[in-house]
Amino acid sequence: MGSLQKIMDQVVKRNPGEPEFHQAVAEVLESLEVVAEKHPEWVKAGVFDRIVEPERQIIFRVPWVDDNGNVHVNRGFRIQFNSAIGPYKGGLRLHPSVNASILKFLGFEQIFKNSLTGLPIGGGKGGSDFDPKGKSDNEVMRFCQSFMTELSKHIGADTDVPAGDIGTGAREIGYMYGQYKRLRNEYTGVLTGKGLTWGGSLVRTEATGYGLCYFMDEALKAKGKSFKGTTVVVSGSGNVAIYATEKVHQLGGKVVALSDSNGYIYDPEGIKLDTVKQLKEVERKRISEYVNIHKNAIYTEGCSGIWSIKCDIALPCATQNEIDGKSAELLVKNGCYAVGEGANMPSTPEAVHIYLNNKIIYGPAKAANAGGVATSALEMSQNSMRYSWTFEEVDAKLKDIMVNIYRNASAAAKEYGMEDNLVAGANIAGFLKVATAMYAHGIAY
Ligand code: NDP
Ligand code: 2IT
Image 1 (cartoon, rainbow, N blue to C red):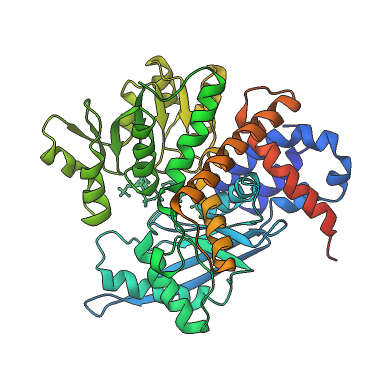
Image 2: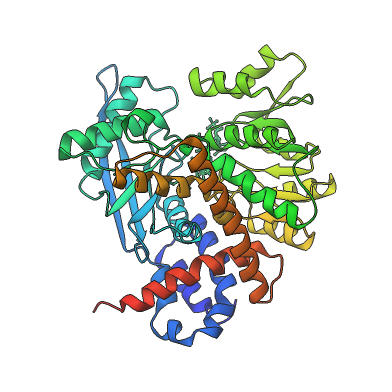
């Protein structure tokens, strides 16, 4: 890194013990060196210094009572990272690993992702170290109500609009929305990912996975390829993985593997998605159960082994740093020529380096998984209009947005002398709009 190294040093010093946050910032600052050279006025106005510091971080206690009457205390967070181009927007993660580092990396990336969508949304993220796994519906409800009791003081349809992420799906959004409505006596689009009978948008459930495939389809086309006839490995088996699989199948590819945090399934005949939806969305079971229904499929313990399966295209859709350098090398060695990130920051810096060195068609998370939040922004528009678009209308807008993100990232990479490097392209294209707004707004002092 060059002139922005001192900002990176400050981030490390000010946020000790937060490796995921450091990783996300380092990648972006590295891409932005060329922008800093071109825009000394932004350097002088401290745009780079300011963009790495969250505007506001809220940390709070979340007490709740389990079905046996025992009291539990979790920690709740909301990182309101940047509101230069719109209200803070980003999901809520419920997972035992959640801490400030993970939510700051996610909130930081969300700034650039949301800017890339072309829609007026700032960057934020939140969540809790609560683990919904193994909890009853009533326990999840009590947690969500307690969480929202505090969070409601900090959010609003024009202030900060949370949504789902790992561990937060339609059930959790429902309990949280109900509590917000009780507390505030207002019916507004304060959360997205709502149910279809109470303000949700068609296509939001499918949006991240579908959007990932629309983005990758465009990236593949630019290199004379397509999903048709390809073998695809998808990690995870949650919301993003399921709808990425559905769209790959619609586009003529074959997904042969899925995973969860315990292990992975391999079905050489192609994953039967109806079974996966029943197991994961309805019964909330483990992916290992799949092989009890489809006897030709194999289950293997340990989730990272999924990257040893031979494939043309890999779509990591589980969690951060799930592909390390060794897994990336294995993918390349086995002939994989494209990687599209449905999850946020699923590849370590070493893995990204290997993709770029081997000319892999690589769709980085900020660009490739922006379809979820883009459709959330479309949900906000529909809520403001008190109107809803049809499935076809929303799907067409989503597709347009993903194609534009690819084109803008690709054009920015070329303009700044890094043709085909969509990591740099996405970081730069996302940053330019936010920086222009931050500069225009002046510095408060
Ligand atoms: P879900 O909770 O629906 O599914 C998460 C999946 O990833 C599960 O299969 C889960 O397995 C697996 N997983 C989670 N944590 C780990 C871990 N530490 N190690 C291995 N596997 C793990 O979440 P989503 O599908 O919504 O989110 C998946 C990824 O996509 C995340 O990175 C999220 O930030 C990102 N994303 C989500 C968007 C959305 O709209 N939902 C939008 C853009 C990005 P298990 O059940 O064993 O925990
Ligand atoms: O990482 C993400 O972009 C999300 N979890 C979706 C956020 C949103 O506000 O829809």
